[in-house]
Each structure stands twice: as structure tokens, then as C-alpha cells.
Image (cartoon, one colour):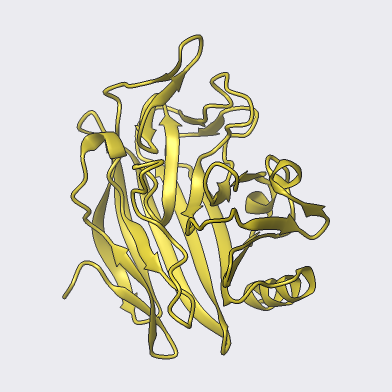
Length: 279
């Protein structure tokens, strides 16, 4: 059985999940979804683009777990700025607890310096919404398997304002023009970035992504948004301060993303994400 399952919606392939990527250590190897497509077949992810080689489609990436880099690339060091360090961790696929055409449940190890820091249970499901839209439901649960308290940080908590990335992250398709970004009551990167919102939409030339936190804890995480430099959106686990996980405790986040053909307006985006996260 292949270790890189293909997600299908109504029989159509919409995403490939790569469990064991062969990547250099500085890219913080980790499983990822790529390519992810609309139902019409338009790709809405990028893998190792020239501007950020460590951006790997859709997945979970954290720049600082007790000093280990699970994001890839340089590490932001207070007083020094972005610095190349030999501190990269890796997410290792262990097994699938469930495998279906429309989703899976996976167990992973987060390892650094030869030891395990976290054990993750990842649940991914694809659901048809309409004949032009489907939803990716992505949950990750991180359990501290060490005997000490672990803390998760970001460049922002390490001294770089506005760079609180880390957690769920979606590197979107780069086009000639930057995508439009909007929330229920805000427009543009400057207004959406670093703020909480019930949902956030990224609209390209012929496609739209609409993301929403689907638990109370996830909704409290501000959005990390880039459109001008590159198209990407994710959650901010450590926005203003480091997040602690006690030994044996588990941090859980769930993000649901609508993947739609066409450029959605605010009304249509809101209707689709409501349908996607409905109980």
C-alpha cells in the first residue's frame, strides 16, 4: 500500500499526501499535502518555491519547539536576526490508524537531536460541498512525550514583530498578481494579518481558499497572512508569548479550508465556510 495516499472527493483526486519526503535537514522534513487542487483541477499549493524552499504545500510547521526548528530555513535569533543554525527537527510518519479515499488518521513523531519531543495524531478529511467546492478538514494534536515542559515559540516571541508564524500553514499558488485577502469585516493583508477572525479568504485568479478555526482554541489564534511577498496563510500558535505543553499534555488545533473554483465574494465565502464547519 502506498505511503503517499491520494485524497478524493466524489471520485476526483484533490490532493496527494506525501508521508516520507526526501528533503535536506535545513528544510525540516515533514509530511505535506501537495498538490492540492480545486474540483476543476487547478493547483492551489506550491512545493519548495524559489522564494521559500522550506514551504511545503499544506501541513504543520513550527519554527521553535524548545529551540528546535520544525519550520525550515533560517532561525530568528534575538539580537542577530535570521541565522543559519544546525537546529532542524523532523516530523516522522509512523503509521496510519485509518485510510480511506476521503481521508486518514496518522501518527507522527517530532524528533530533534535524535530524541522525540512530541507525538502527533493528525486527522485529515475531504468533503464535497458543491459541484465547484470542497472542504479540507485538518486536525493536529501534539502530545509532549518528554519528562519536561515544552514551549512553542515563533520569530515574534523571539523579537521579530509581525512574524508569529507557526502551526497550520498553507503555501498557496503564486500568480502574476497577488491574491485578494479578506475576512468578514476586513480587507487586505495589513488588516487581516495578526488578527483573529471567524474566517479568512484568499482569492486568486480562478480559485478561492476560505479558512476557519473549528474549535474555540483555534479561533483564538490570530491569522498569519502574506500576499504581497508570497501567497500564504496559517495560524499563529505563539503570537505574543510562548505556548507551554506540560509532560503528557496535548495541544489540539483544527482548521477547515474551503477549496473553491472561481473568485468568491464575501457572501459566498461565508456561506460555504458555514456549510463546511457545520456540525
